[in-house]
Length: 469
Image 1 (cartoon, rainbow, N blue to C red):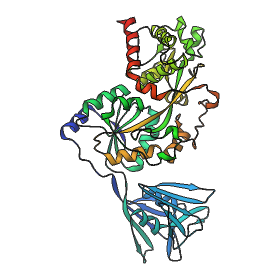
Image 2 (image 1 turned 90 degrees about the horizontal axis):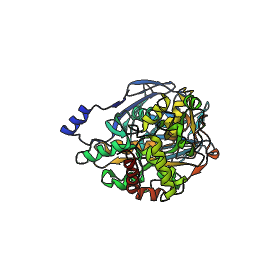
Image 3 (image 1 turned 135 degrees about the horizontal axis):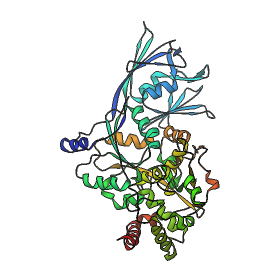
Image 4 (image 1 turned 180 degrees about the vertical axis):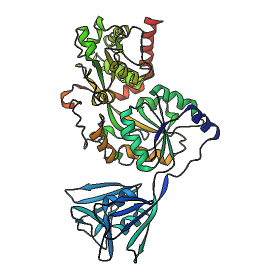
């Protein structure tokens, strides 16, 4: 099994010295199935079928999910239309139960035998699917074995720089690596660190993808770091979450919130429900915040606060920010993760953080934490991934972005994580997540905050320096 590993500095240095050769993201696959048998083999590894292959009108029918996944396709089933679909690269295949007409990239094609349902399982003609995808099919009449030989996406390497939480890494990156048999090397660091590292390496890029912490503001201030790519399926997303400029693939929504240590809150005899409550003198030095000039979540909090306190240019809003800086008592955490970890471990009473890791802590059994969506309003922003200019594993980088917005990944995120997906077909049902209908949502002017980011951060730095330098 391929694994995600945190790269050591020595590996990065060696990569810089010797470099990497761009490789085509493909791996060979040999599939062997036998008529009437539930045993099948993919690259000599035995697997079990829920429906044995059958012969009808001289054509072999096999379980549709098995053959699609074995060839690396994204599969789909529409119970209303009774259609099955396969998406692989630029190939889109749709078949209908009981129909001998299939559609390949919207072009009608005649089948020798129609897909059907046997014992509650859908079976499809193996030769048509395999050869349409580009594989070779051989038939051994004496053993009644079908052998499919081809290639599927994956194999090789992928290097990812990311500030994302452990929850996302486990449920997205690890799953992607295993699905496509890719050695994924991960360097986890704050957003500011990612950008600094990418700038330092831009003449000899070591990363293929920046995943998380990437948004329009980051792109506008670092256009030379990224290259264009629009992931497959992007046009199926709501317009507000589609790739805004050809560079950014949005895949989850990040919401700003406060995380409260309820034991410490109770000990102080206070109740935290809003940004206003953070100015309580009892909280001085007990509020966790990262640096908004280096942390994407802290930057999102700064924008959120200014917006709900009167606007990005409002003197009253900036006066509130100055009062909040005084409450920090000269202390900033080392990065985004140190905020929620510090609150969880009792170092701080409350932290300015975001929803995904906050909910993940509750999921893991934390009893001393409470998520607060500020009563003044909370902003939700699309979080993106982007391909690094000069990526050495470009095909795998594209494959990863395709995967991020695939139905498979979006459904998995909704079912198993604390992430709100960009695809509304898959709403999150986590009991620790308040429905959006019960949250006062504030809507950020992303274009303004993106184009004025440097001056807003400079103003924050000026206020900080006035108080602590």
